[in-house]
Length: 483
Image (cartoon, rainbow, N blue to C red; front, side, top):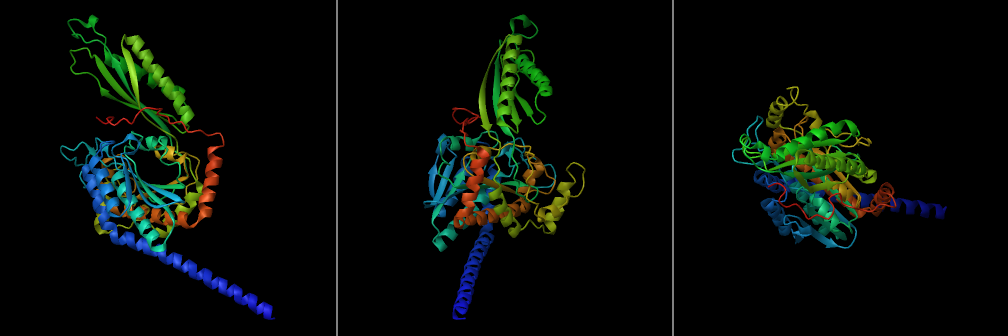
């Protein structure tokens, strides 16, 4: 009887201790969310400044400096100009393991300058716009990093928190150079997010991607008086494009090939001595992608031979497909569900209604999608897009989310996305992302079993024989690719 009472009392005491620990942990999480909510104005202001800078890949001087300044102010230690990229940096807090990394992007896209209004209104004299929400990405990730840093300080949590400032995601593969330089080799887990039109964790892959600028060289001549003396570089470009367009019939259905002619000559009456075409090739498999890319290269060689020109090409970027991690995805989905979605006020609803009527179908936007959380997506169908996060995900367990920074139905790389990102709708989605990433980072610091589980899955998916080889080879970062 005495033994029974002692055992019962011991169990009760253990339960009380366990409940107290859980209550304390919940209180700490709530404090982190409160802190992000209280300071959100600071990060909204940073995001809007970067939105206004609208700097393209590898030219994000002011954007990178602003993010670095905020991190330095918050007590992070900075490494700048990493991987041979002036705008790339790493900010660190703490020491030892676990090492938890948060990614931040900040490059804009050329050709989509737009005011923060719900009708097409290009900004005069501005070359680019944040049509993919990277201004929100960088600022929101810093909001999360600062909140986690403060939690570490208040609780005495051991380990290292890092923020990676990653330039030129849009076709410049900034992260690939950082991976290639071994800057992620000691990281235990990586967290990231992206602008979107709904709130979701997607445990799917993406498309591997390679790009190159093909430059044809001919002989200039008078196009009417002496055409026989000319060899048109533009003919080389057009012949290549014709052959690649025929190639489309003979590649896997999931392959995507797109191009723009970036230089076609100066005047119709001068046979062009030089011309350039910029190609992207994408596929769910980097092996297939590489094989198709080699056929595109052969088309370029054939076009030069047939037109009496010469051709050379510069690999601009290459990115792996994403390697999903379900263990991390489930943890992040739990936190996203706890945080909740984006709720519009009357002004934002009116804005969303006008944006919706400019989209395909011309209907009012389904704003309820912004307030909800999508089910965890475990589909094996890859996302129809590419990202240099792919290379990171094959180096260290990685997970990301999307939040509703755009009016539901808004496509990325559109003027509507720029408009939403420049006002409160974008800012609200950014705060949802910051809170979700902060909570997930805390989980990783206090749950070594989550890190172990994600690492085990990572090793299994990657395979024992995996050896990392960047698709862009040993080239230096193309710091002028947007010139």
